[in-house]
Image (cartoon, rainbow, N blue to C red; front, top):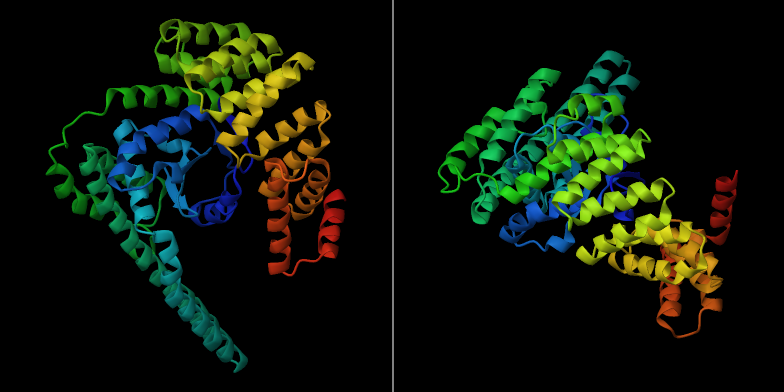
Length: 467
């Protein structure tokens, strides 16, 4: 539904908070995930040839956009790629982004995340042994020596683990070069990005000791890749024009959403009539509660591209969020007709229809939200909206099922079980919806049994939440 701040969208990325703690050693900063159908579509489009070259199923790879201005991307949780907004904003060429994503694909195909468990075994042993020897020395009265042993052991363990990860990074670099070659894409962007990483490192004072780094020094990476990349017949091939166009407009979209209102208008004065500038101003005016100006910008873009589903989505969002609910229907319906598999479009239309509080729209709202839940069954927000719709229709059974789905995705065992049990009593036995409620209940109960969780534990947890 256009750019929006979002909580964890899928349960499989709960590990994100843990990962960020490892990847942000130079000071904490507030981070959040952003959700945007167009940006996610763009990332899938530019990685399609990379995934095909890597023999990966594109549908199995999930993208998450991190609201962070640093130049970074990483893989975690198997086939989940996290991309900082800074990777898009701070690069100059779409092939730089593609190069980084090819590198991350190399981590996926190399199963590097799983293998880090193996790489951690030796450093863990080193750390434990040094800890035991240090404690023994301290107990014997040699306090300073004991502390030195512990500290030295921790450093040795860290160096051992980082040496292992550097090998993985070098492997991902080589895989990226091969994927780019097989996909017919120039590797120049990959080299340019590594140069940019190197420049940023010197600017922010990152230590250059290669033995305390998880990645190889950029000069080493570039030297290893330069020969391979420059030998390719695609080295001087320019970026795909369609990819370059969407890259520019998405930069404007991110800037309009994340930059302060005044900063956006300074960067993109009215004299700048590029798509990127108008897109940025549309978001800025929306944030500044200047609806007429925001609509003028998006209408100008639609005059040039009347069948652009994402421009239509933004127009629908502008109208919806400014209370012009029924006016939002037409652009959103048109967007859905152009991109029928975008769950966000259908969710926004369903929300707009429910917000009118007019019963004549409820049937269509439920239909759109149910379609959206089939496209993105892992979205707690869609199930929340469906629960509202079912409640308005007086269907307590389906409302309970929707609440159980939402609770399951949020990892809330108690509400999952209670709502699934209620749904089973109210939904006709043996129907697909009844079977789904039974599945949710069985999975939740099996999880309790496997983890020795008792009903009293759930009641205590519920009591703590209410307080």
